[in-house]
Image 1 (tube, one colour):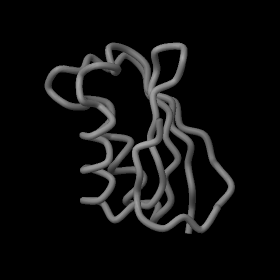
Image 2 (cartoon, rainbow, N blue to C red):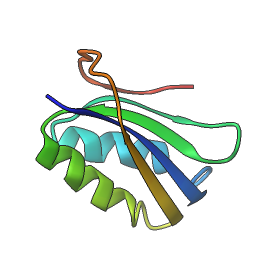
Image 3 (cartoon, rainbow, N blue to C red):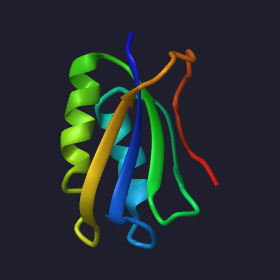
Image 4 (tube, rainbow, N blue to C red):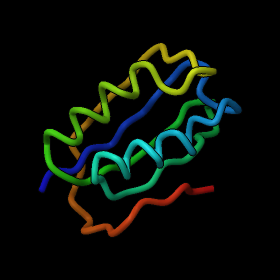
Length: 89
């Protein structure tokens, strides 16, 4: 099972991005976490099938209605065997 780290930049904090991300991740059967970063971006780690990760990355390019995503960076990550999905502080 693959894992990926995502860094999403743009207007992504204060617009419900983390809650939206968690719902989308669950819809795609992904495990992991999402959090706001101090630089104003949103970071996430997702684990699941490659097709589900790819679908999540594509969904992030738009994000929720109030967001304005300028870039989604995806890097391979080490599989951690996470269960469920959580919004981190």
